[in-house]
Image (cartoon, rainbow, N blue to C red; front, side, top):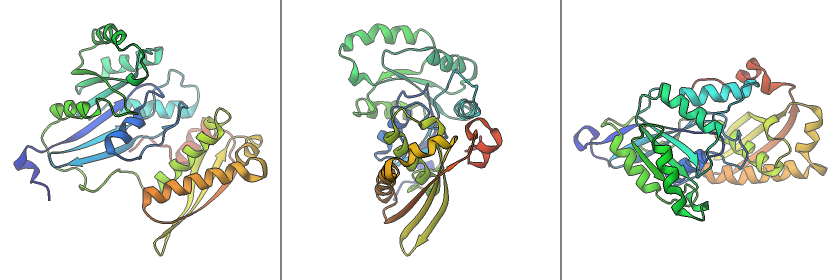
Length: 305
């Protein structure tokens, strides 16, 4: 049983993790939580929604906000939605983690930094991820000095989210900046998202992984059935593509690709939910869903957590 927060110097609050696409934001949350919550892939736009990951310990409750990567292009409604979701996440948080990819500084990183300079009210930690991929660690020192001069960071720390290097130190630095407070969520709660949402995300992740470069931006997943039947989840998911020609790609030859996606998603759902899962997948065409604000909202893409 935990100590009463007000009597023990208990700390609680929100940490926004922001950065351009594919710098390892979701991988970092999964590492901190000690289990997989956020889907990952090597493709940009894997994360499309804000997701809370909640880590409760004896002395703290740290609530991490995983955000979509911030994009320079906002021509499609989907990109505009993701930019709004990412930008609004730095409001009303206690700490901001600005995650960058090793030595790779891009125009999109500049865009995120510009947003921080105008909007950040909370202390910002610059987190330089993927340090495990650097052959020459000494080359990072001048890079850190250069980046540190661009903004008044509360701390600058190189890490490897994938391997866990310096992640404990990062958590310690976050706690130093976190205010004292009460439990915000029940101590056994891992996320604010529903099991339906997590099921849809797992199907989408497996589609990204199986389709490679072919299709991911044109895919979304909607859960039409989620029934609890005697300790088993019966789940029905619809995969939406934008054009008829994409449907056959998702299904694959003799349905093999869709079957593999379903198997991988089902096994991971069973691990996440701790019970048997019966999963059925369908593929349907909904033309232009990714560039239509109304369709996006109907498919669950809204600007609220």
